Figure 1: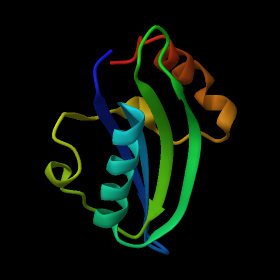
Figure 2 (figure 1 turned 30 degrees about the horizontal axis):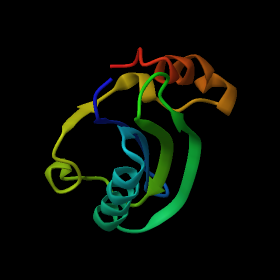
Figure 3 (figure 1 turned 90 degrees about the vertical axis):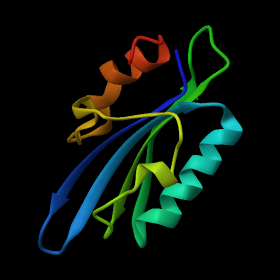
Figure 4 (figure 1 turned 120 degrees about the vertical axis):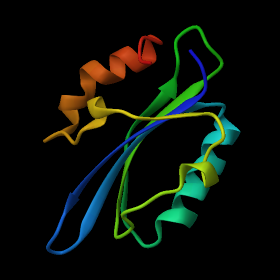
Length: 113
């Protein structure tokens, strides 16, 4: 498993809201720095919701899966992370947290790429 950042965004128009789902796989100290850069570049954060976090099986890497609800509709990922960044449709919003279970299991087992 390599260090990487995955994202997926959905939007609504009235009121204007953008829901950014992120999966960050990295070392613990890097996760905090990436999260701070996201905050700095997305503008006003309405809600920060952690979906899951944990250690990747048989690895020193940590993952964090979270959603940021914001008014910011654009991100310049070159200012956020210099490694692999990928838009990932599997990070679409779920109706409840149980809908994430299969994806979280893949992440934990190092099968998500």
